[in-house]
Length: 408
Length: 132
Image 1 (spheres, each protein chain N blue to C red):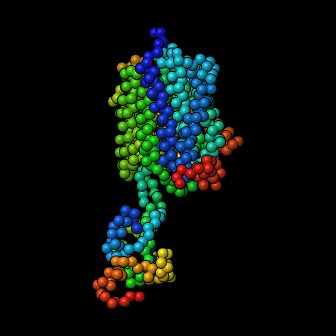
Image 2 (cartoon, rainbow over the protein chains, first blue to last red; image 1 turned 180 degrees about the horizontal axis):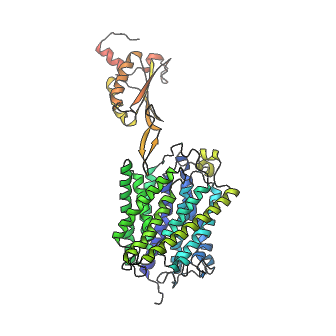
Image 3 (tube, chains in turn blue, orange; image 1 turned 135 degrees about the horizontal axis):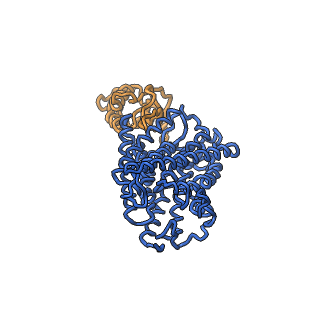
């Protein structure tokens, strides 16, 4: 088929680009509601500045590393350096019905939110200067290559047959396991384990989660890259999985005490994470199972993390890492070519091999992200220092790092 | 003269204000404070399970009044502020050396008198009776 631009497809991808963009400040609100009032601006800013930093990185080098012509399936070549040649014309590999530049812009928003997800691991103590460098290095060394492996034509995991509709492995597994590595490399917060660190504004977190849910329609629905039945399928699955996970989390939290609202919205976000790799490959009924299964995995992952007295502050590993792993593996069970002829059948549709492929893709991605992140974080800790001084931490990062206060 | 400092549940302020108005306590100041008493705090539901918070928002009422009005006032506060559970609050009573009303310069007892206050009502009931 000759690539030609379809106006409807292009409009939907542009709208989806804006929907995914808003998820990053939404994430900032989701996280900042859970920190103490002296670190609100700092926490919001970790998301906001990532939008600025990674947008530039993506235009300069990120896009070509992720989607340039493959070098042995490991990394994209430099053909698209500085978005050279990425223009209003379609691209047969990635964007047969929309401008290549629209595809690149849409993918930029994924590259932006992924490092922002990691920030929940080290809020309330991260040194801003070190964070800036970390984010650029991480986007270049972890996000761009993994995006190439999974989504790039000729990428190693792509060739293996791994299914990842909208970034369960590329976004959530990489971010979740990077969060784990960084939390191991940075010191815990002063007083962690002995002082109660109460969320300062749960309505912020609810606002953030609501906007994440909204934006996720673009994240998963837009990944169809067309205004078609597959996009609808992805949106319906996305909403259904979030609903199922929110309800299951409510039940789990109710069994332990009362149905916590912060818990319910956390559950919804975990459902959104888990459906991300599956959204365009499964039926709505399967998405109920995926959301319902992901909630207890993340819930008990948080319990385990708390039990180990480990300060991975906002549970990025438990929610995004383990939610992403659950979703990617369950894609290997529930995927069916009846939903997406371009996909594959999973174990429940007679193809157990798909589950093995998913397991391999998840393991490779998690190990790579964890390993590289740990090395980078340790190197930064030795040189610039990952955490602020204890005095600055006690005063709070809003005043200490930014010279501002959130509330007068 | 005495000063009453009453630490009460924030949700009971309206009840306590009404009870004090009923007995003729006119002047007061209210502060938002954080703290805890013997119960040590409360348990809240978290993302998973529960956690303890020990700093709770309470209201502190300050009232300065004549010695002979103290018992009646603390009874009114107790009745209106209690729900019968830990966290109902506590009342402290201190001696007051002097009072100055800024507008008029009145001192002592005269500075805490109001029209229709607790003492004015007493006088209406029994004209001529004297208090300290």
